[in-house]
Length: 260
Image 1 (cartoon, rainbow, N blue to C red):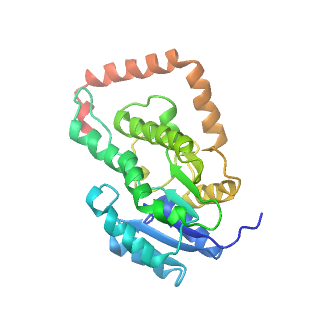
Image 2: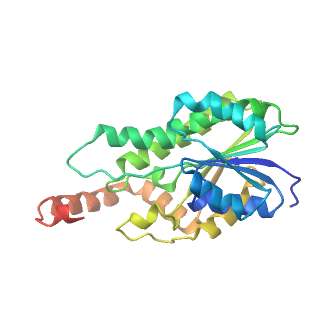
């Protein structure tokens, strides 16, 4: 399927999936604005695609910066055809402690960051010559509870609900796709100390996303094997939770539990 030239804005594009997506869209001839908090990372990505990728520094957790970002974006693009809400963070809890600040940090990026980005993008979505498209990167982790992932998983589940609800409230303005990736090898997941089944590269993830976004699905889940595994676990939750509850009890009783 051939897609005409688009103006694309991708947040969290200094590395990982966002960087790979930016490269894919730039290689297809689209104009891509990339955002993140670190200017050096954004500049490095832009330099690999001169004239096609434009860096725009934006901390999605900074509510007060939205008007300035909105103005800066309007100086770069006449409109936005495709907005990819990709900025994300992950922090793991350490039971039996519950750190409110940790939960708030993760939610600020993964949930409220989407709202701030949409606030900045709305005027340029409204001026798109054809129906624009908003896609948000959530996670298969929102399907079922995972050990230590209470902050991350709940923020991604909240983000998915947000996007699905906005599809109703803004359905006359833009299409919405919820993207739920599995494990992708990024700087964020490199910190994980547990097995990551069906691990994909950022290139594989970006190729899957760019190809399937052309059809503008409501939901884009991948990889399929992990998706169906988690769907099955949703049907048979009790064994899953009992298994991990026993592991948690065992680890709390172990003197080496704090070593990780």
